[in-house]
Structure formats: C-alpha cells, structure tokens
Image 1 (cartoon, helix red, strand yellow):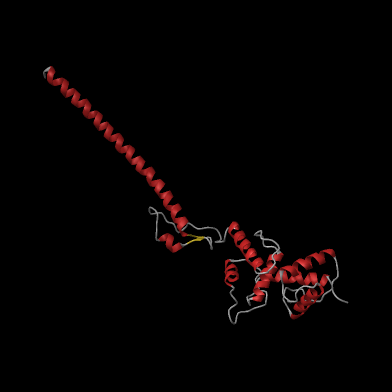
Image 2 (cartoon, rainbow, N blue to C red; image 1 turned 90 degrees about the vertical axis):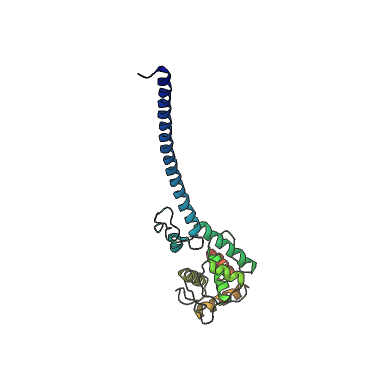
Length: 237
C-alpha cells in the first residue's frame, strides 16, 4: 500500500490528465464543425462571386468557359444559367429611354422619354433608320443607340428602306390603314413600304403642312392617329 503522501499527488495527476484529454477532444470536434460551416459559407460565396463575375449585362447570360475555369470547391457550375438569355425589363426600358432622349435631341419626335416603346417611338426609330440608310426595324436596341450616338450609317450593299422586322411591318400597316381611312390610296395594306404608300404619305404631309419626306416618322404617326381617330378626311378631292 502506497503512503498517503504519494497517493494524493497521483490522484490529482490522474484527474488533471482526464480533464485535459476531455477538453482536447471537445475542442477538436468543435473545430471540425466550425471548419465545415466555414466551408459551406465559402462555397456559397464562391458561387455568388462567380455568377456576378460571369454575368453579362447585355446578354443576360453566364459565360460557360469562364465559369468552368473557376470551379468553386469542386462544384459543377455548368448548370448555372439564366432563362432565355434576355435583358431584364428594367434594362430594356433604360435603353429605350436613352434612345428616346437621343432621338429627340436630333429632331426625331418620339412623343415622350418614358422608356415605353409606343408607336411614335417606333416611328421615330424608323425615321432615323431611313435617313441613315439602315434597315427599318422600329426596335430599340443597344446597336441602335450606338448608331444614334455615333451617327453611324448603313453598311454598303445592305438592304435599306424596307421593313425588316414584324414591328416595322406593323407600323407600316397601321399607317396604310389610317391613310385609307382618311381617303388616301397607299395601295395594299400589307406592311410593305411601296412606292404607292410613299406617295400617299407625301400627299398627306403636304395637306397637313408637314415636311414632305415620304417616310414613316413620329409626327406622321401622331397626326394620322389624331385625324383618323376624329374621322376626318384630309385627302384632296
């Protein structure tokens, strides 16, 4: 049997060793949990950062090659994509508003600068496109805004003066319909800017003391809409 003076220190040493071992075990477990949580947070942050870095504002898409070159913690980012790769509605409105402002500065009447693509705005776009030898689209776009700001003209050999889009054909068709209602003869109401339609537009402009251009424009659409809505016949007998 050990003396009492030896037993007490041994017991204290044993209890101290047990306590230290328990604390080390608990700290290791806690550290692994914290590291795991930090790993999840890092993964989430990496994905968000890559999405933000690879998002293209003008196309609304995520670059596949760049995303795959920066994998986040082994996750497959190839599935990260946006629907339909279309600009957001707010972005389209801002582009339209900028186009309306730039066209008005240059004398093309759009009616308002509200970011809404109305018939007058489409008519102003077509007037600019006509004057600069561009295909008639009646559509606001980044390319159109650039052409307006830089004063770009159409490319040599490109098709000009003919409605290129469904929107442009709809505008021409509406003008033809209103001209017929007012007693003019634009020819077939088919959305084609024919020589007969151009002649009817010139006749209407002359009767209304508007500059004779023979093209679609914002003021033409506004005047036609007002007179046709009032049921007035402006054609000369």
